[in-house]
Length: 334
Ligand SMILES: Nc1nc2c(c(=O)[nH]1)N[C@H]1C(S)=C(S)[C@@H](COP(=O)(O)O)O[C@H]1N2
Ligand SMILES: [Mo]
Image (tube, rainbow, N blue to C red; front, side, top):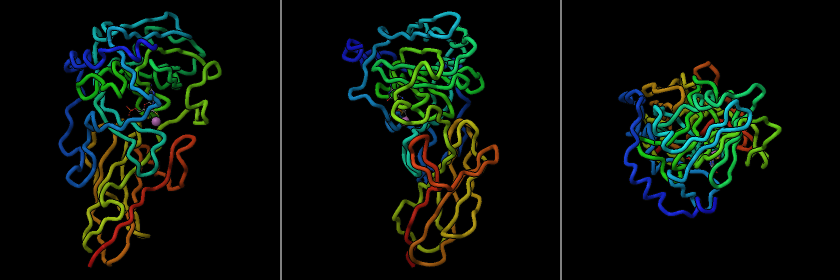
């Protein structure tokens, strides 16, 4: 591992790869997928703006030529895949919103990319997952570990990937070059292993991953969240119509509705941006009538595609993700 961590040439070999072209591209992004003009993020996050969370003191530098992925444990056939093996396969592109369990309500640890890679379910089907398997225990080149419920990675419809590309580029070094996992609907610490080198099919008892050992939940599906991006906390705006805007996410279920509330008023439906996928965030906007000068609050909440309303009950990020309605205070001037 030391050689992999310190080895030269990862940056150069990444540059030499040029672009990553999916054999099966994601459908074109519909017009009006974000409200960037109003202050939401762009629908797809630029690679250099994608949030980053990891325990790495130095970013592992792994050259594709030195990389391989071993799939073993409770499988019928052990597999070892090289970079060339992966590149020879059909590469599919899927847009996914990834978020961190440590994101506070209203926080920034959520981003969206068009990931390109090999369906994880196909690799696991080739290996032949044996009955009784419970988790996919993945390990990175720097020894970080992650436990994912086996059902989330063997279900083809879920769309988990062994990803090699982000927005048609090789993964940036800090996002897991040359390969990482991406599983729609699960927080990153239980799904999104960067610099992945080992996949062991096993049980929950046999192996315990890095953050599970540190009191975070064993399983952590994404909780429905929404955020007000405009107005900003502490903003000053003229009395009258205030345009609020933000994002909401409920992967892998999708967002059906977002509602906003001024002060203690009624919840009002916001307008939603174009629907892209149940695995990605959805932007919203709403015109709110502010009649009186002074301090006001705008809150938002989402309704997922199964009709469940985002809970207003406040929970901290530990052990399995924060809940509560994001509320922004602002001042209206006469
Ligand atoms: N090797 C490795 N992979 C990792 C982590 C890590 O610390 N080491 N952190 C995880 C966490 S907590 C999250 S939220 C996502 C973040 O991925 P990103 O940095 O590409 O946004 O990566 C996951 N994969
Ligand atoms: Mo995370």
